[in-house]
Length: 93
Image 1 (tube, one colour):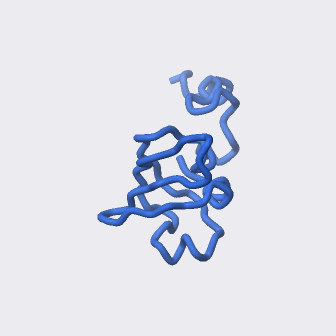
Image 2 (cartoon, helix red, strand yellow; image 1 turned 90 degrees about the vertical axis):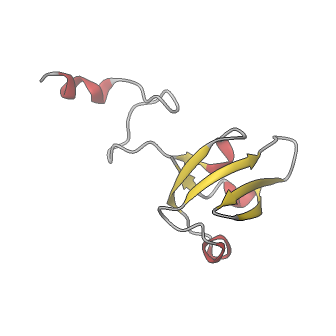
């Protein structure tokens, strides 16, 4: 019964900070490691929206190396390269 009141003060499992007001922890797509499967929460880039990266889309991160300028993602049966600068603008969880 009391557990729900104390949960708000615990650090978030995904990045160690407190929970945001809406209860959802989001990070940029570029922060996740290779092999991660994530859900798009917010995307304001029109070009990636046309590729299918809309809110609610599930993405599998195939390749993300810090020294490379692009990320390789899988969306359904398609594979895309996304520039790192744009991936920083896509919020996922």
